[in-house]
Length: 637
Image (cartoon, helix red, strand yellow):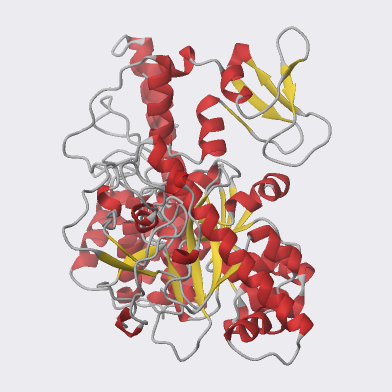
């Protein structure tokens, strides 16, 4: 169905709504790239392939990708809109799936306009505060103190403020109600903007609580006086709950009173990938306030925090240019990194990274570097982010995790040490996802020396492998790395149960399904020596032998007396550890471990050669077909 929709859509027409395209030759169209600033056109659209590509910033994709980035819609929203335009019917959704209600276009447009007007109000307030302390350095009061916090304490430059449209929410409870709201912000059937503002969480009904403090302490509402194209202090329009925002609720019988959601806070507008403001984050500026240090907009019809990344719109061009993105924890981290030249940074919206956010980032780059604060909370967040990544990670991705030293956050670090030091730290200390998880598990388990520690380690890394569903080849490599952490050996068997494995799996070898001879050829003296040395190594390093016992036993020919004795030794490991074992970690034990693993691999090579010889004999005698012979050789490896 999706291919059908793409086939019916003309990508030139879709892109042409946002970019002025001119024909460049018979099969191409060119224009200025909408994803980065350029003076000469390097953005091309190829109708025959239904694709676009920018040779300047690397942006590329199809009509779906273009609309998702330009209009900030989710994949499903984009497909639904394209299907409607193309006249393609979309199957009814799963009745058991959660219903995502989307506002009608006119309601959505009113919501975006309301957010833009509010952002302008907050920006103007901060600009006025900064002008105040420039004109009167000794000025007192909330406005002056807020400006000093921004200018002196945090050192945010004007260019950074303008880039991120940082603003200031005044102390008052009804600042937004003082604005002259245009009719375009009124919800259908309403006579003021209250319903729209409540729907996008700019205002809340007075009965609500924030951080345990009720707004009852606010001054009583004044007489109902309507501002031109605005709404009164007390209005009969009810707030529109985000969950039911597709339709406009009927007004309540009793009038509702509202208060501003953001008060006395530094404001960070949050934009979608199309550049539209969909939410706000507010940093508390009155330290003795009972409110939360950071306050984010609630979920609304235009804002789903699990899908949005702060700073992505501003960082898109830098991400494509650098071919990597830094994921940090807070608004201020993004802002200050950008101010010091690290412009390819984004932040999740007050929660751990979600799969949807990661998928969005992977549309821009395959290199994602998580940067976390160097404290306990940062370590916890790093581990959670790592596990979120696992279901999506593939071998082509470069996922790294960096925890900063000495309890610092990215804001502190880049202001103290500068951009070059930050870049050097990332290159030197950011661990690949695999090594980070390995080291985390070893730390959680207290190492991998005792049997109990190794058992806990194996249980936990098996849980990690279950999450790796996107790339089973990568999962198998993770398994080898985890086993190496247990034994110190570099060549380890693939995990039982992994994709492509069988019920029998040893050091990469699978016993074929064809019937092998009932009696394998008698081992030579050298080969018998391998079995004898295996027995000695089993006794010296029994814990290692237990880990690979099933694989070794699967190789044995029990008609051979020497191999039968080896099997009995392996079986005896369950009953009691042999008394003549070397001390774990001693040179003797390490030699025994290496001898056990290396001789097991030599023995496997011998068995593999035996099976190949038997397959050739069966093919020559006509017992198996050529097709079966080739298939078994491939499975044998």
